[in-house]
Length: 458
Length: 106
Image (cartoon, rainbow over all chains, first blue to last red; front, side, top):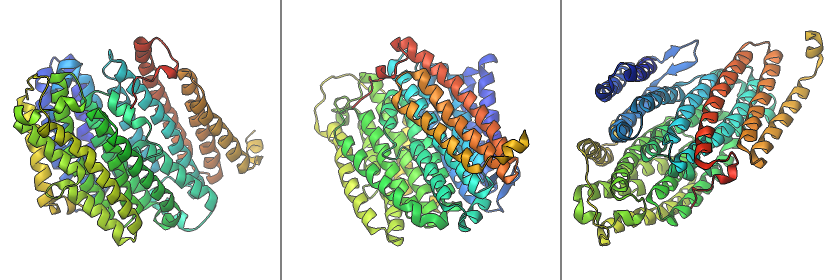
């Protein structure tokens, strides 16, 4: 709860910063505020679950672990995005929107009532619709914002219909009450329809195929820092909410819904990985890669295995987000200097910018899941979890999809090291970007060596 | 009046809401004008509201009706943001037809 209060207060303070002529000092204040939110969130760790608002929010270890993870990612994201927002747009409005969307994300990981799930998703989404369209003069950005808004509100309709049918079966929005009444088998058809509609709504938000078609366009058109936010914080919150709902409410119906989700995972893995191979723009390739990672994450929900699944999702989302922020920061720096986002922009980077190239290679290896990096262990835990619940076929399919993934991640590495530079435009890296790239690379390597640091959070 | 409403079987509400919801879905999928698509999304949300109120009456539980207020508040916020984005899009493309949304592809 204290997390929500700190984040909301920080958002309101950020809005006032414009009036109070406090813009220059704002950025350190936000970072200190996020650090405070992390500290106070951790204070309730391993105590009895904190129950708020007549049991609508439960801050148990799951909620605290994901809140911490979200705050860490947001902290890195702010360091990455500061320059863009200070130079290009009105920073205070957009920073405030990001902080308010964090409030939605924290509600999405700590809800114990479908009302809070709905409100959390909407608080998060509405802020991000505005952020996606924030580059007002750019037709691509407004197109991305509009598509995101349209598909997001369409998905909300399905989510709400699902919530309503579940309410019709159980007579309550409380997750525990719903779980108990689902076991009683009243109105099985209505219950199953509700569960499937909820799954469709959440699959839209989490960009699982065949409900992913908006994602590449939106990720491509939105300003690069906003894309990084959508691919990290929004995805983490969406999967935590997805897991929490199906883990607490519908474990008894796992036989019915896991078959449907199985097909969604297989479709996601193949469509995204095969389409990513054909891309010429690195930003669009990263968009498809983010959809592919949604597929691996959904595997952990298909192979529902209690806290082991939760740990796999926590570790996967955190390591994936750290590497993704790394990749998008490099993309932002390079595309800003060279004015293009295709693979050609990265050619010869290995000679001119050894630091940037090394960072990019570590990020790509982690996203591809190559052993020394954290991304490998993320996939390892998800696959291991699936094997334990006898989903061997799914693991074989996922390994094949990951092999396709290696191809397009290595295309970036080949462009960086084995192609001569053609444009000779210097790429300069600011001090703040150097710091964030140093931290993300260090985290990617260290979390791969010490995964227990994260896994013991739940 | 309330006696008359209570006399209507619950299934009728479910069928009516499902039909309204489906009309909304079809509108989103097949209409090309952005404003009409907005209206269709609103229709989907209001179909849900109707069903929520019907279920709240069935269970004699106020939380379903309170949820309707949340839905309406969120829908209002969503439309405010959506229309603002539509204005920005119109300034860039001079049209509210969603067929102009074809710059992003690959």
